Length: 258
Image (cartoon, rainbow, N blue to C red):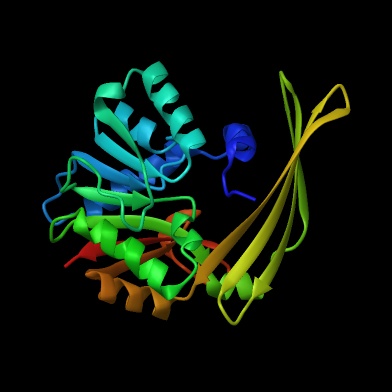
């Protein structure tokens, strides 16, 4: 089972259409400006860019954005969306792994890694490799903004089984998820079953397992130091003005290159 293979990637935007990417980009702009030492941001790197849902709105705001992702299917959609939005001259999408991909245009003024992409790095070595690669693309003082699942909240409010239905012009998508925790490794395995219905008839079923790491603040500080960053902020994802708490399932972190 391939993570974000063609079946799941093709339904990605429909499943997450309720996400307010514009507001998330507002936060990214504010945090990048707040924690940039010179306050000037013109070029950004987007590690784990997916279908471009952060990169394209940022490009529409005038930034030059270079994205990298491991899924060819998602990058194909990102390029098509960038062309439709008229931002092909300000966007570039590269196929590669966030742990070692070399992005053209470096160094960048800031970098982002959103939608829990850092959590797909399961081991300590993978996390450090990803952070170290981000660091190689930034000058000293540049901010790196990311979001992850927050360990204290995950343990307190454990994930369970869920089902979601999305109706569209081409039919209905039903996504069923079941999650289990491996607390010894700080990992959550989420099993996805995605069923496509037309006229109430099942047309296709896709299954994938996504193994996600969740993080505790001491871990993040240690990983940051090993990769050449200093931690500067850890905020609640739903309100970036508030500090992360044990109720913050998702948190936004900011590191600064040192």
